[in-house]
Image (cartoon, rainbow, N blue to C red; front, side, top):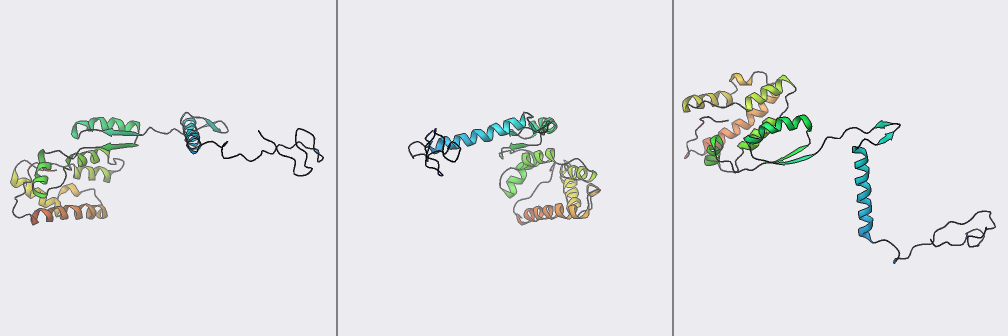
Length: 209
């Protein structure tokens, strides 16, 4: 460490200065002696990591009180319906999960939507969103039941039931508040209008969700 003279008496340490103190002033570092920028960035990153690691391990930071538990964060690459059972178990461990799903499903009602309307296959995404949906209130359960409902296999019965849902007359709407109902119905009406615009394609509601 380079030392400079005391600014009061101009005596260089380690001699006692006239002001009765020993000067511990550092001389300015030259550019050659400074650490490179990458080392500074690495040191800061390590400091952040060590601070996070200490908090996650329950370090004593406030009068002996342990740090709050931080649930783990997960990134899940999976298929659609086959992974839904695992989702229920993951929810018991942590809610900090990012799901990455394919949009290439070509079966069931998803295939019919893609055939008539085009676009990506949304069946697996819909299914996963339902699995992750709120279940804490009676209304939340009613919405989940509505959006998870499957139409009958018979084409005529399926079409009739679909119209009842779109028009808001179906019993599935019971338990859903008016503001929530209008929000969901607005999307269903838009979806139905897109089907009607494709008059050249006859949409089949059989077994649809």
